[in-house]
Each structure stands twice: as structure tokens, then as C-alpha cells.
Length: 298
Image (tube, rainbow, N blue to C red; front, side, top):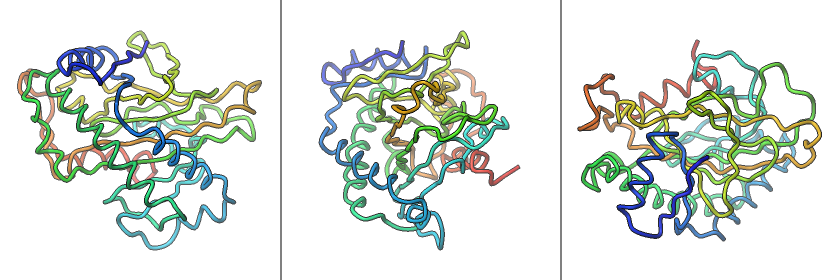
């Protein structure tokens, strides 16, 4: 089971629970997080309306000259997350709208900018709470991660998983099995057929059924590397719904990738043993995997 942790109480107690989850499965669900539910609902509704637009209208945000700070639309099957781990698989059965202050894109769909900016700020605040709990769980000063996150390079991605229109190709999923690239992912998602699955240490796939009003948190490769693999970046995927439940399988997720500033150096945290990895910047670590997923490198 994915542990559910209430952030509204004692920080030391929460930090202990967070540390246990990070060491055993690399996933946790948080409640008592303080993020405005009305803001979440408004952001979800506005992006759902965007995904309902005709393909030609959406593709206007996938083409042209890129400008930092504008969203970028990624059509169905344009990404294969399994490729980020070197696996060959057909393109994922999802479409997305990606945005971050430093991420290059093509333009703002009507009405989305104020919502995205407010959502970004609100969930970045939650990210600060969680990274302070991370520090306490690792027996570090509470502010240990703060310098690396000044001017953080976080971004967000809203993903639409439409009902399948045809049977998937062999090996095709809504999102192929992968580990996330960065520090931590803060996910708001819906419980619908064909949802998030996490691989346990025994190799079994565990369905994640999010608690209403909660965020699902998982660690990425960067945090595993930072902790010298003391904490886990866990393999996960989004399954294709069973054929008898396809009609009710539309699903949307709002994903917040909370990462340090691009030039922050990631190296073994004190107390996490003899370093297994060479130091590298946050940008280098994320770009190396993103290029594989998007087919930009061999």
C-alpha cells in the first residue's frame, strides 16, 4: 500500500513517516497539505476544456518558434517514457500541455496563464514543506536543501488520457514504465480505469487509488542519486484500461516536477555512505533522460 501521511500535525512525526516511505517504496500520499482545492478544480477544468479542442487548434501550441515561459502541447503518441530507460515501445497513449517559467513553448491557450501561475506557486509551496521534511528525515538541518532550490527549475505538465479509440499496439501503455527524472513529483490525479501503477520490490504492479483531495508524491532519479540510493526512485506506469471499462476511462493528471535550479550540483548527501556517483548538475541529469523519452537521442 502507498502510505498516507497527514502534513497538518507535528513535523518530526511527519518527517519520520516520509523517510520510511522514501526508503521502502519511494511513493507517498499527502493530506492536510493546505493547497486550495478550488484552485485545483479550476485548473483541472480549464485544461480539460483545452484538451477537448479540435486537434488542429491544439497543434497550434506544438509548432513554431519556441519561447521560454510558454506552454508546449505534446500530441498523442509523441513520447515514449519507456525509452528513457532504454526500452523500445510504441508512443504513449496520452497528450499533454507542459509549462514552466524556463521551459520553451509556443503560446498560451486562452485563460490558462493565471491559473497555471497560481497553481505553480501553490504547489511549489507544498514542495518546500516536503523538502524540509526530507531534510529532517535524513538527519540534516531543516533548511539543508534550500540553497539548491533558490530559483528552482520546477515545471508542470497536465496530461490527458483519452478513452482508447482502438486496441493498443503490443507493449503500448498510457505511459510506459519509467522512473521520474528529477527530485520529486507532486501529482494530482483522478481515480479512473487505466490508472497509475507502482512496481513493488517483489516485482508486482500495485494500483494506486488516490485519496480524494490528496497529492501523490514520488521520488525521481535525482533524489535517489542525492541519497546514494538510500531512497528509491520507483518504477511506475499508467495502464491501458480493460476493454469493458474503456467508456469511463478518461483520466487527467496535473503533474508538478519539483527540481532544484539548473546549475545546482547533485552529489552524495552527508551520512548516505561512500558516494556511488560523480557530481552532476540538476540540468544535466534531467536532460539526459528527457532526450531519450522524446526521441531526440539514440
